[in-house]
Length: 401
Ligand SMILES: *Cc1c(COP(=O)(O)O)cnc(C)c1O
Image 1 (cartoon, rainbow, N blue to C red):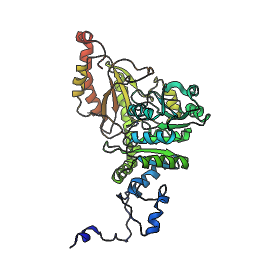
Image 2 (image 1 turned 180 degrees about the horizontal axis):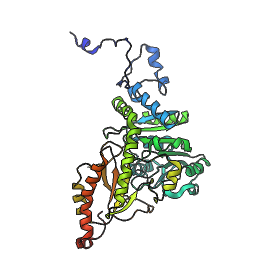
Image 3 (image 1 turned 90 degrees about the vertical axis):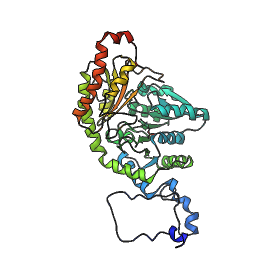
Image 4 (image 1 turned 45 degrees about the vertical axis):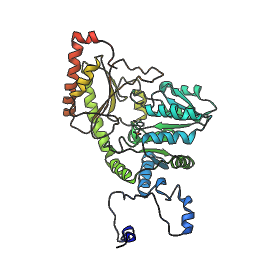
């Protein structure tokens, strides 16, 4: 048997075969039958296939699915949520242009804009997420793109997206939304006039904390082509295996999200009665400053929220977290596993976000039994209760961070 025989695989059977799942077709190389079709492959860039980096039948199925769910005409996949933010921003702005990001935007997006785009000559302006229609006052002739993220990362400010869209569109400026928290299930940016709806599919859509993917969905096909050009020329491609896993995740996404939202609502009621809890950050809570906007624009809320605790020394935070057996400590969210991410929602912020001083945990509620989650948290919080009730707490004083 020659080496060549080992390379050439048998022809695929032409017998009819259809499974319920999306076919995983892996490729860097895409093969063509003749010189003509090879030389013409550039014509396949947006709607067909020419090279694995530019898409496979597997990634196209997921793109078409996201486009449909977002109410757009086309969607583009990128290797992560953050790369989707890079692609959307770079598709709209070049050197000399101005881009606006809310103070509450996903932290690495702010770091990317200030650390990568600003040195390349894009003017980056960080604005108060609560500005609403008042954003008109900071739009200039150079402004090309306004990002919104509602509610904001860690601090959960709800933004008046329709008012921001009206002000931006009045000056011909595009609006992009990072809709990772709500997903298309609970908020549909394109229906509110947003031009680019972005999601980190790594979160709710994939749903198991084991893959990275991002998406941008648009109504305008010309804009889609521009996004695709930026993505391919930056060398962003996606794995068909990840796309198939994400497509599988989409099928259970509504059931998972509704279930974890219900558990989160029960958990929040319990948390509000705990003496160590100072603040719950979740726009679905009556009394949250963005509650009315949330009620007007959203059809639901996922089980992702923040807890601010009353002061206690840092040592006790480690001791409290060490009690957790059901919750795990980790970043990201939207998966079946409940997570706690101790964070600092005031860090790097230019505008006051109304969050009281104190240790902060960002919670993502998964699919475990609610009673197990409450038991787990009550063990952790009993550590705080001890310290807050003891004279030692006052001796240490101050924030844990
Ligand atoms: C996680 C997240 C991202 C980035 O997604 P990755 O796939 O982890 O790069 C972007 N925006 C928001 C709001 C996120 O929560």
